[in-house]
Amino acid sequence: MKTFPMFLRMEDRTVVIVGGGEQAAQKSRLILKTSARLVLCAPELDPELADLVADGKAQHDPAPVTAARFDGAALAFIATGCPGMDAALADLARAARVPVNVVDQPDLCDAYTPSLVDRDPVVVAIGTEGTAPVLARQIKSRIETMLEPQLGGFAALAGRLRGAVARSVPRENRRAFWRWAFADAPRRLHADGAEREAARLLKAAIAEGGAPDDTRTGAIALVGAGPGAADLLTLRALRKLQEADVIFYDRLVDPAVLELARRDAERVFVGKAVGACAWPQDRINAVIVAAALQGRNVVRLKGGDPSMFGRAEEELAAARAAGVSVDIVPGVTAASAAAASLGRSLSERGVSDRVIFATATGVGGGAVQSLGDLARPGTALAIYMGAAKAPAIAADLLDLGLGSDHRVDIVCNASTPHETRLSPTLSDLSEGCFSDRITNPAVILVTVPKDARPHAALPLVRVGAVA
Image (tube, rainbow, N blue to C red):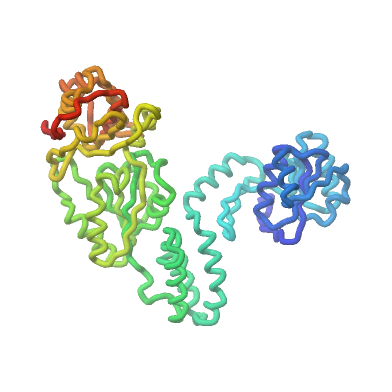
């Protein structure tokens, strides 16, 4: 290790940045995250830097730079863009015994700017001694997904409570208290936006002299795994996977998503293949609740968004009936992924001003109604679970008055390596020409333009008349 990582106290100290362009602006944005005084040395400043000076966030010194300009500074950045001038200015800063960073010239640097994960007051710095800044940014992106955005606020709350802990919690119990605070319910609640409840829980434990005897409070998270691609997971979904003790997952969840979970988390497959009932919903409800009542952090991992035709309400009701904490982590739903794969929007200005999500499969796999009531002019219709019923759906749309040459988009396994995209006409689709190419999971996207004139007085259409 040629450099030693260290955090410098910046309060009431000065940082000098020499340069007035974009490189200087980049360093200024970084230093403005601290409480340091910022001095900008350049004959002229670009508009961004000039605004900082006008707002009182920085001082401008247009005079020629001498070694005296660096006296007493904590750090100097040289960013003129001229290699020769940068080298000369770096020598002046070193003559004033100030650590210097010369932008894009690592051989001239005494200090290197790390990639930062900022959860103030929690800060993670990643450095490569100037050899591989792109790698540092990639590592930063990984860490960003590991640390919840609210972590800094929780750390600050913990800091405010340290005095109370010292007064009320016996010394031998403090480590266990802080382990509980940062690894269990308080941090989890704060990360989910329940800051007041997290603070109340911490203060109650302090008043009792330490962490609760049962330091494991079970909870259930209904987590959307998205349409398939692991990199479409939300940051919150990733965090839940990394906190889970046990994961109950569907057949539509890509194995790559499960690879993002804790290595020691138990994985239980509860998927139901079409026509199979090995895991009826009542049994799924029972096992996820039972695991939570054992004090385990449970993730119920569902393809797409758990609230979109995912039977989430039944699992929510079961958890609440048992007194188990439960929350929902939204996921990217298949219709959004399908539209993205097609390179189009779900809605289109002047063509469709409403988007309707519908399912072609009802309770027990039976037919549902009301497609005729939904497919009105100006509507973009996203039909889920319609692979086996695609010919019937097309026939119904033809009966409504849409033209036989009207095209629909069908995306199977959206966002995965197995994705298939089809754009048949209603005529071809109704005749079953594409039936062997439409596989679950599939989304059928139908746009009924505003200027379309489907029959207005037809009765409700029964989608799924064909099994």
